[in-house]
Amino acid sequence: MPDKSYFVFTYFYRIENWTLEEIKAFFEGQPPEYQIKLTAYQWKTRLGELKIFKNLSPEEKIYIRAKLAEKKGTWSRLFFVGDVLFENPEIENLCKRIGPFDGHTGPPGRREVVFIDLPFDFDRLKQPYEFRNFQLLLFNARIHFEDCFARGIWAPDHQGLYGRSPTLQLELKKLTRQHNLIFDALKKFKVKDEPSAQALLLTARSSYSEIVNNTHHRQFPDILAILFMLHRAGKYEFQQSMRDNLLTLARTLLPENDPRRGMFECLEQLRLDEIGHYYSTFNTYCRHLWGQKVGDDYKAYYSFHQASFPRVPQGGFYSIYEGKSIYQIRSILAWSDTSLGMYSPETSCLWLTALNYLWDEGKTQDLISVGRLLCQRIVSLELHRRLESQQLNLDGSVACFLLGRAEEADGRLGDAQDNYFCAVNLRNEIIASETWDPIRVASLERLLLLSLRVGDSSAWERWDAMLKRMYNSS
Image 1: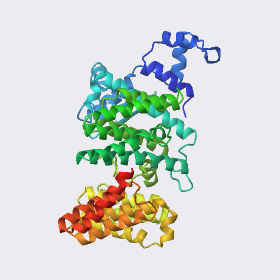
Image 2: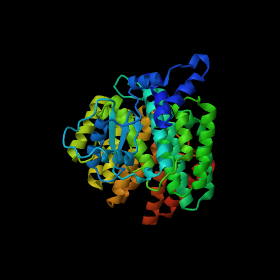
Image 3: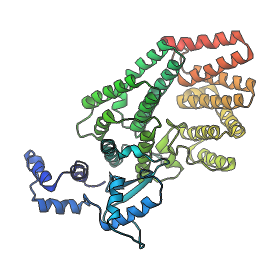
Image 4: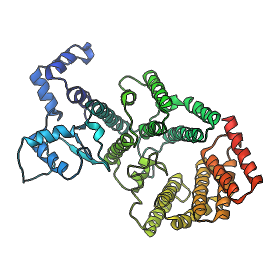
């Protein structure tokens, strides 16, 4: 980890753009235990020793110009110079002054220059205020990731998986539940079921403190995804209320020097877009930070995502399966069976991710063949085995739902109905019938639609009653 003072000095000198004299005056005015007395020249030397420079060197300009020329769009490639997001238009203007160059364009050695490619031109960053706020958000994320790895919060377990301690698994469940509650509430708003929607939002509000005081690395990507989801649905008032409440809690629960608190401060002013570019860019940067520490193998992929379905349909979520044949995908799943255990949550997650990827690609037959294997594996277990692991029960229910959805799309309505019903029954094994549960809700909603298609009114009444029981008690 860099010297602790590195990020403090970088913030003042690079982010706040202070002069050497301003830095000198600030640290001379601190309490004795924090006081630093240096001349402006000594400050310049000290910052140089830490590789903190305000301006680009000629070698950095040449390297960045060459990399900019490889991409279309000013903001389709982001540059981080010494851990700080740099303004691309400023880079372009600086590069114009150095004239033509046909020589070496390798990475400069003075400090690290990193570039991250985006699948879009994020031109909203051309607005100075938006750039400055997003720059600060990413800088705080950089500090947070560095700190959590250094303190062992996201340390690997005995299988080499990162961020999987019991505490972190519980915190991820809280983030997922928050997302699912709001997602379902937005569905209820769409069908004009205002009471159910408001009840779900009320439940979501009650757990804000658990979202703020959360150390899982998916914390801020998930919060951004939720805010984007609300923005896209036009629920601006609730979105603003959520931001305000989260920030108020952050100022109460988190120390002033906690980088998470700094990120919450940035959220207050973040102007979300309709397409999800802020979320995708932030998530891409977090994945880059993760890869720097963990690598890019299958275990690193799982450790970062720890989910089978993307919060927002962008950002390389399915990267380990993209472009691969069904045989290659099955090879990855066989690896997970052997390396992580057939009934482990990690293996089930990789299988479910494959099912979701195949659905997105429209490969229904492949989904059905793989889905049946996973469903049979879990459902055929003895009841006491499924009851031993709530996660295994959930994974089996999700697998049955995904299989049913593919069979329904393929016209196999009877098989689909059986699998939706199986998903409901699996959840009934461990969750009271009146407790709101997202996968049971999704399965019952599909059963309702199938009942209408086949004209089975008694079945429709049964599924409808089960749904209402959950919403009336949520």
